Image (cartoon, rainbow, N blue to C red; front, top):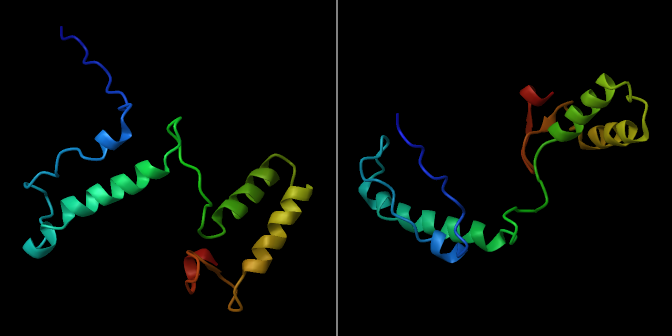
Length: 119
């Protein structure tokens, strides 16, 4: 019978957390040597960037940019709940039509071309 290990907690000093150990050199996908030297620095910069934007309570909040999947899934949920004629469903449907591209599809990411998978 083994004793359970204590649960790791988020460090109270967020800056200390951004300077953790470098990634293992025995990576399953080794990078070319010129790029490999930059990876630990890129990871540290990314961690620092994320931690600088983290709220004191541990969450992040930012504008969500992407495709129209949230609108379409919300309409689907509203239809399932019998609310397909609600003001929210109508507003979201107008947004979907506003975002529809001339060829009939929608962008999967901002400023991208239409993808048939999103049509």
